[in-house]
Image 1 (cartoon, helix red, strand yellow):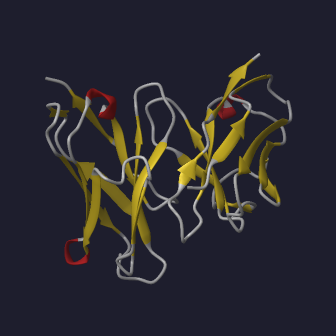
Image 2 (image 1 turned 180 degrees about the vertical axis):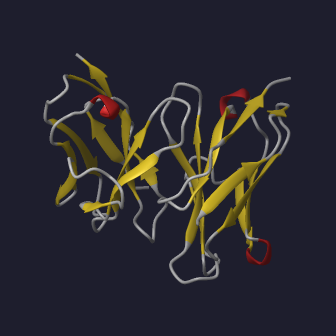
Length: 113
Length: 108
């Protein structure tokens, strides 16, 4: 049974760094073809793809956010971590981790002083 | 990045209607195109992958098709549970991924 679960702070101050963790089970990120992405959705708005890490360690980022994003994996702990630097109130959103066919429930992050 | 243009942004329909939503890619995505359904407060649900393959457990009234860089999601006979927002996602393996802007299917 595949599951993914996001965790991280609910509230972050502007200009701080946001660190989110995706803990997954039911598959291994060392298996060929496996990929995990982060996606976010501001309240009332559309889905936005942020970043992806592949089984072989390749990483891909949204062009508009790539200077602020870092994605990494710890296969031994079945975790994928997303770091977003210099946050702004515009980064307020529900953040999801996903394998495309399976999604976490999402975690709402609010950026406010 | 590959841009995805999704239309319409809103669609008003009645139960039993045939509904069509389109996504156009700015370049080839080699049919790496998925469709999702999302209801308020919940995570997206995969309906179609690789442009036309029905995800396990998804009703057969949903179908996907492709013609070059144009992709279509069709709901053959709209059911009450289908009122939701639909998104396309291009997931071409050698590129950053991108979503369409979404289509809200609402009751007429």
